[in-house]
Image 1: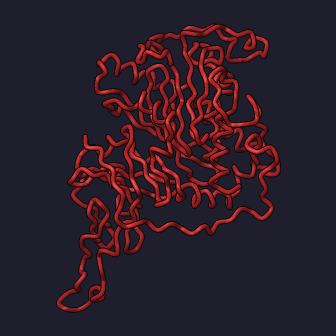
Image 2: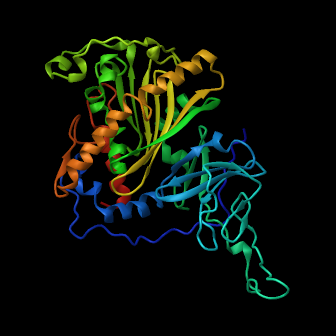
Image 3: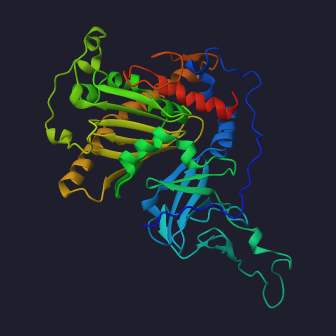
Length: 429
């Protein structure tokens, strides 16, 4: 597969920063160890995020490269609230552009996936190449010498607004801003290295689904960085010893602190007394599975890591739980709703038995999985609990008050603080 990289010849317009925070908004003392509840429910702050984060100088996951694997392939997706088209043109180059006709602003592509030689808006049949450049305008010269566009109409000045695109580890990333640093630098050394461990293989897509969760998008961004809750809330993880804090593991933050890796090694479990002393409900059960094959796994790597969650700021997650490999990304659908997408993956080199095991293990964490159900519920509990108290703040001091790596313990909220470090940096709070 040709992994083309491209930067558009025409720079996209960058929206001006019109949205402003409420006049009385102040980040509380305590830095990243405090998070004002207001950021989860304030429409003005939500509007600012669309400008400064989703249309700002940040790289965003758009889709898997496999989803535009062939020439002419088209994939529609989202960057924040903005609809996006990703294409692969006849030369094998990957492009991304806003899904909005240059004429009247209608959506140009309506299907989730398609394969065509060009893009045509159904409203007035304006036709674009797969690179987004305007090719033809219906009745540009009118009919029988009458009507049509003005003589100075220049099709080259009317195209689908392009994004900068880079492809890395089988994933397509895009950004609006010409000021965004190269993706290589945005990710940093530790993030790239672990992405390559899990993703730099001949990938295949095993399945895709999505779910709507009823909480602000940042609560999910926190949740996937929160190693503290994983074995307290998720009974299945603890009862069946898939992921516990008393396994060897750690938290690695990127140089920017915005991205993180949480990992554990199942074979190193040494039951800690704290689970019993804290009366952890998820550690009280001694159950057996009627279908124990759900947890049948093979050692895919020689580093002993059997569970990992990796995030890339702001909305990308990569998971490898036993052998369940998946990309998750989440799209804000309003101040209190988020759509969460899952792309389950395998390797082309998998045996049929291994592929079957990956599919089975998708039940651990997918939209109908044992873990995601609990995360969806708990995030909605936080949304409901915080919405009526915008003047209060979360207390995030487990493992310290700063955002830094800790490879001796995952009883820490360091990665959550890292997210807020990035958020405050971009938002100017």
